[in-house]
Image (cartoon, rainbow, N blue to C red; front, top):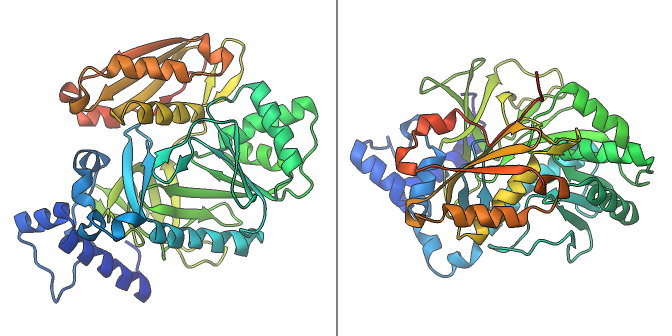
Length: 425
């Protein structure tokens, strides 16, 4: 692992001590292993590597004691994530910590792109929440201060995208936050319709998917705006952001990133990316496996930043559903559908994955938690009801129900949330 600055090391020790003394999961681990801190000092390597499955089954055991009672319980904010493998997680944050975590990203936006919170922004989201409760799906939502206009990604039909762009033109934002796949679809629509651009637009922030140089160039050329690439998770907040050379730099004030290969941290070698948030005091998750793969580079970037470069080698690719007409639909739509479905069926999903096996056929592999035995068909029914895109409604959706007890964890890790179909060979 790279060398931490003094302030980051101090913050890490606070998080580690809090985890051991205030959470049942880590208290039990150190009791069973009989590891003791040296002078009240823990090494990060003393802590176990954490999987998403462990959090799924023991979520309450990761919550610090003080957040289970008044007044701190009132600050709890619940975040949801499906990850690269389609295993839904519910992560608690103290809303004050969440705000502090976001501050590092705001500093990045201001320094690199001169973007501030006072400027108008459009965001394409998988789902919207009011506190800890999911909100009803609506086509657009304007924040109370009138600065943020958000769009649901549940329906990405050409007609809907055309309508979204008309709304964006009227709103005239300075920047847009959007997954690369959706940005490419929007760009294609703009070009086809010969639409103008917002006069104030100067920055596009991409998130949630990896993309290649050609895709980045297509987005930059269509929107005539600067491009920023953000790598983040709901569990840790922002992990890294791109510099002017396109390299992802770690946010050392916000997280500790490790690349693990054969159970050990490595540099300049590929492995699974594990993160430890330096801000989440409500639910300290130490060395959490993101399921993404990457390489931490020991060599400094030519941009001059001291923070390490993280090169992603396996992440959520910029994939598309391809229908019989040849139209490309961003796979991010499936995340929106899965998130709303899971909320409506009491968050019963253990995992959900999608595999397109033809231009008009999609496999949906889903598994419910043991406490929700028998809910699989109801989950499938709710999912079908969420389909709003006319062309997707016409596809054949094949639901395959898995039994968690019979599903090998390694087998799950070999499959991604969405496996695309490239067409007939």
